[in-house]
Image (cartoon, rainbow, N blue to C red; front, side, top):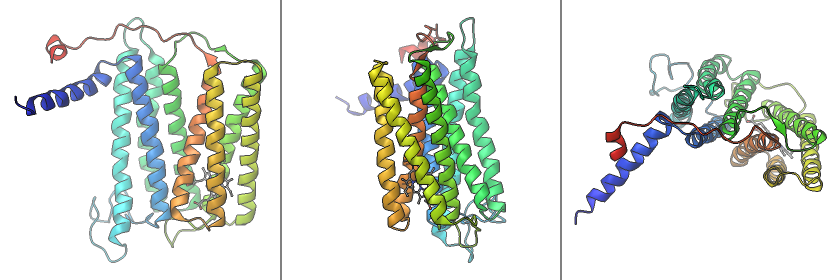
Length: 335
Ligand code: HEM
């Protein structure tokens, strides 16, 4: 028996399934690509923070080149190789985000065609590559501004927008196209919207704390001139509001016998928020050590994803339409 053959067959099968997931998509594979977009956007947000906390923000001092005469890191006395590698690695990661964005668009484009096509998915998916292009150009602004905290903050917030777009795509791929029907009382829905707005305000206050704090990305970078204690207090006060709203939402969902999925999602949100709060306090009292800042950025994106998720689970657009997907050529299907 040749042990190589089954392995080759498995690899081929995996590659084929991968190819079919965007070339001959179903709503389910579209959802998986949207989930992949959430994951890579969260990932690059965390690695972007790693660039900042390791002081590698100007590791590649020019843009789009890494050094004035090279697209890849080249030896220079001005920047340590490790900082160059970290900043350049983060730039390379944007190609992964772009690849996932393109797969989302291809899958959504295929699902948008035909009589029962779903053009809404294509419109949402297009936000991903558009976001990558905007972020790549904005990255140049960040470098040219010498890491001005306002430009760094916008860079972070654009990623928060791309994550939101991917969450919407994920939600829409998993439901039908009927007009949205509330599954909860309208006051609870309003509470959910207020919670999302408060979560966004919390993220906004967070980037102001970061722009005021010590992790600028390079010694040469300027800082917001705010009093750090005051901005941290504002940030934590908003965090208390968010946790309070989440608790209220969870309670309201339970006493009104709302859908189990929405209740579970609200509980997950509360747990993520409380864990994030613990990380926030510990990092604050330990003078913001790099590793905890990264964990805090990961937590912030998770709070955002979970908050949006709860809102989408409080309404329904009917079952996912059964589409007649394009079939691959027979010789593909037979492999
Ligand atoms: C519970 C939900 C919370 C969320 C969603 C959240 C979110 C954020 C975000 C988005 C940032 C900016 C990250 C960046 O720009 O790279 C940030 C920074 C920060 N947060 Fe929070 N935060 C929360 C709770 C807290 C709490 C309770 C504290 C306690 C003091 C705290 C302390 C900080 C500090 C010190 C920074 C600045 C870190 C740095 O210098 O890079 N956070 N937060």
